Image (cartoon, rainbow, N blue to C red; front, side, top):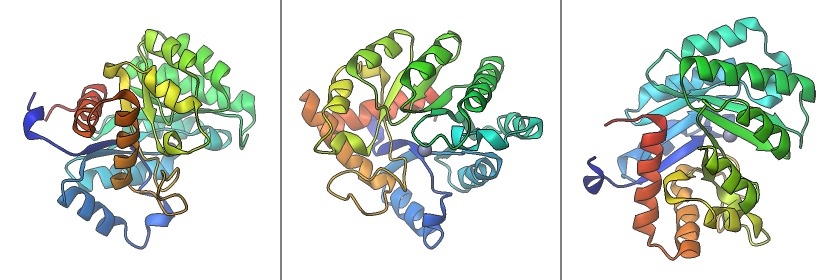
Length: 262
Ligand SMILES: [Zn+2]
């Protein structure tokens, strides 16, 4: 491990393919990587088209990686060909996870039975290919947990974790990682700081989910990986650790989780 010579944020979940970066995508990323602010990032696909874009971005920067998969919002459009395309993309060395996959009962853009079926099919794919998964769980905690616990051999992360401390403990016992994003800094949010305090050192990850979920004090602006600093600061403050400790810890955890060797 060469961690003492490394620095910077590992943003485990971003959407730089979003149209909100169309005007300055490469300028933003050149600056983040060039300045050393950003050690690495994983761009997450939501359907075949955004997964292809994520893969393209990953090939543009040495330390950009991607997850490819079908988001619950897009579940209703997923046909056999889409699953085949996702599994083909996973053969690329830059595709380090299957995601984002899961259940979203907040928006319900796809019928719940279809979301569950598409989620289950991708959990089976992850098990066969032995690749980690990135879980999107919005207001669907019970069904998401039930689905993942049925696959004890699947490893993964609950991205932008929004569950309780109790759920955090339960998932970690089953080997899952938890990733924290902007909402941990929101003033009316007590639950997420409690969940972060209940997260073991070796299971803790951080992310932007940019362009969404911008942390305090930048709420209202477009999010980017540099703002993960505020999430790390918040976690460090909560746990009585230094910024450097939490940045290094989350970077090393992410490298191990995604199997990144260099
Ligand atoms: Zn996302």
